[in-house]
Amino acid sequence: MNKTDLAWLAGIIDGEGTVSFNKGRSGKNRPTPVIMITNTSESLISKSQRILFDFDIDFKILRRKFLDKKWAKSYWKPCLTIYVRKLKSVENLLILILPYLACKDEQAKLVLESLRSVKRTRENYGRMASLRVPFANRVWDLNKRGLKEVTHI
Image (cartoon, rainbow, N blue to C red; front, side, top):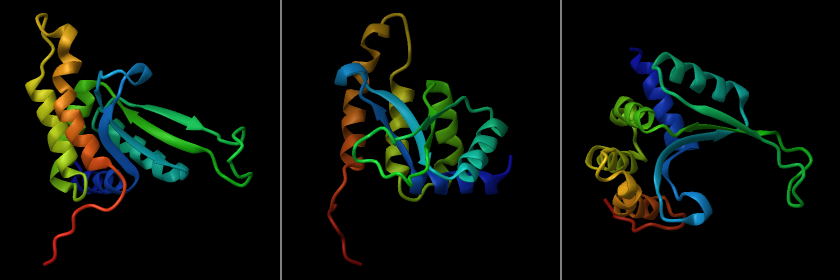
């Protein structure tokens, strides 16, 4: 295990990534844990991809071009996003990078707590997502843009 790579990846997720929950189809309240890294740099995405491969984390990459949008600028580069969505992969990645996260550690702890407390069983399969709602709401609050309460040292 290369701790330097994990620390680097944690820094990228802190700065360029997201640790959150997808809201589900059509905005329905069916939160699913997700980790994303979005950037236009091929080399940053490539290095992130290599590290995820090395630690056997399952992911997908989406390439988006916004040139067909009215608001897009002609000089924009394509945007690349790495998605880690499988529950076991999200859990394994968060366990690996949690010691190195500086900004998104609270979100990571909440996602891990939701994964550990809401296990897939035959009894709760249909209501698994609804059991994650309180965790998702807290993560979404942490991820909101704007000024947060500032504490002075």
